[in-house]
Image (cartoon, one colour):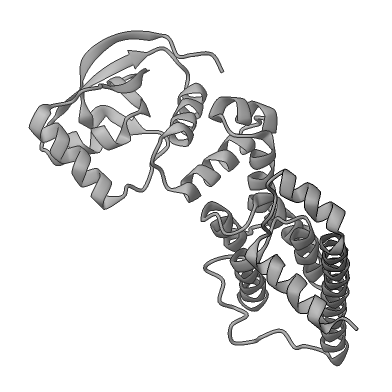
Length: 298
C-alpha cells in the first residue's frame, strides 16, 4: 500500500469523525494520554480523510483514536487533524498497520488485526511487509484464528509456547498431540517450565475447548476409553525408557573418560610433561572422582 499523501492540518469537529477501526483502550494508558494532553497540549495531530456527503463533509479516522478520545473526554469540540487523500479501504489498512506497529498494544488486538488484513485479501507476504512481522508468524496467527484457537493464541502472545508448536498442536488429532509435544521437546522448543505449561494448556483445551469463552464441555467432560489410557501409559513408558538409555550412555562415557584420565596421571612421563607446562591441577569434582575411582579399582 502506498503512503497516504498528506494535505494540511485543520481543526475538525469531533462529532464529524468516524473511527473506522475502533479499539478497546487500556484505562491506565488512556488516563496518561488525557493527562499529558491536558498539561502540555497535543504534540501530534490525528490523521483523517475527508468524506463528502449531502449534509456536509465528514471524516474517517486513520490514526490517533487515543488522542481523539482524550480530546472528547476533556470537553473539546474540535481537534487538530492532518487531512489526507485516501479511500476507506486504504484508511482501514493504515489503521491496522499503525496498531501493529504501536510499541505498546494488546497482543490479542494485533492478532485480530492480522486476521482483518487477511480477510481483505492481503497475502501473508504483504501483511508481513506492512507490519514488520515475519511471514512465519503471520501465517501461524492466520491459521490459529481460522481454527478458533483462542487458548493457543493467548499462550503464543504470552510467550508460553512458540507459534510453530501452537500450529502443530492445532493441526494434530487428539491422539497425535502428545507426539507433537514430544517432537517439540526433542527439537528443544519446549523444555522445563514451558513444557509443563504446554501440557497443562493441552489438557485445558481438551476439557474446555479451543475458545476462551467455551464452557460447553466443562459439565460434560470427554469420556476416556481404556484403549486411550493404555496408549497414554505406553507412551509415557516409552519416553522413560528413552531417558534411561540416554542416562546409561552418559554414565558409560563418563566412566570411560574418568578411567582414561586416571591412567594418564599414573604415567610419570605424562605428569612430567604436564608439570613442565604448569598444568598441575584438575577441576575439584573431576579430581575427587578420579581419586575415588582409583581407590575402588582392583
